[in-house]
Amino acid sequence: MNKTIACTFTACALLAASALPAAPAPISAGKQSLDGTWSVLIVTEQGKCDRAYRYPVRISNGSVGYAGEASFNVSGSVGANGAVTVTVSRGSQSAKGTGQLSANGGSGRWTAGSGECSGSWTAERRS
Image (cartoon, one colour):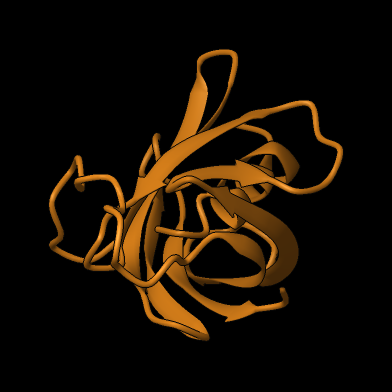
C-alpha cells in the first residue's frame, strides 16, 4: 500500500480505535449534540506511515464526514454517549477507527485495513 494513501486513510479514520460499539446509536433529542466542525490530529505509532496529520472533520446529525476536499470516502457515526466509529476508504484500501468524544474534545485509536499502520487520534471542537 502506498504510504501516502495509507496515511490519508488513517488520518481521516480519525475518529478511530478503542473497544467501543461498532454501531453507536444516533444522538437523540435532548442529548448534547456533538455536531459541528472538529480538528483531528492523527498520529502514527506503529508502521511506516507518515508521523502525523491534522484534518478537518464535520459531524452532522451524528454522521461523520470529511470537512475538506478529498478523493476518498469517509463514513461513520457518533452515538448519544459520544462513541465514535469511522471508516475511510479509497478503492480496496481502508482504515477504521473508534474512540470517544465529549463536548470539546475526544480521542481514540485507528488501524489501517492492511494492518500496516496504527496509532492514536485526538480531536478538538472548532465550531
